Length: 170
Image (cartoon, rainbow, N blue to C red; front, side, top):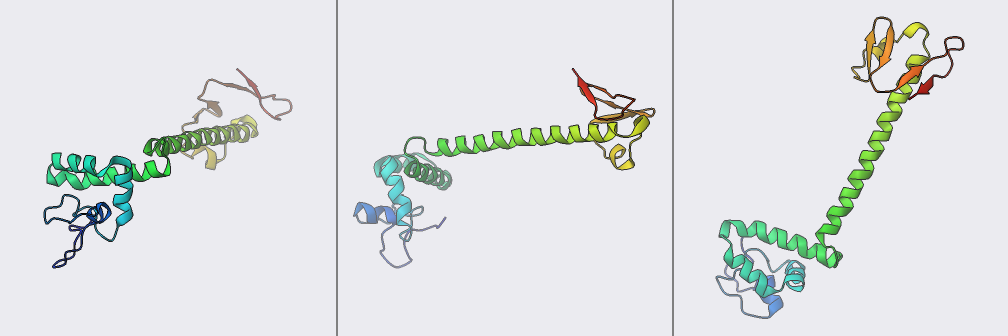
């Protein structure tokens, strides 16, 4: 963020004063946050909140908090211009939906990995487990003697005669 909306020595008005068609005073509250070379920044803020309301908000804040307040105001104004109904809440909601979908996808993938490990472990005779599986550090299985036991609440029944696909019982 720029410290001054005007060039040193020049009487160029800030973007707010330019849009409002007024003379930019030396102590203009908008000048440090809305430089002349970023007119759209203030245009969106003015369109959504109004210059008078933003002026009041900035006047009530200590100077050291105004920069953060302007950043928030500009963000919300730009979001409202893009989505007039929901604004930044619409963007947050969309991101939350993406997180939920990705968490579901991750859980399904983890379940598939567990299922594949169970199938691979069950396909070896007498509970033999190759070192790549038994030393994987996964808490999914714990080795007890020579048999591999699942930790979760599902019992695996292996047909000893065929040693084929495991049958699941719940």
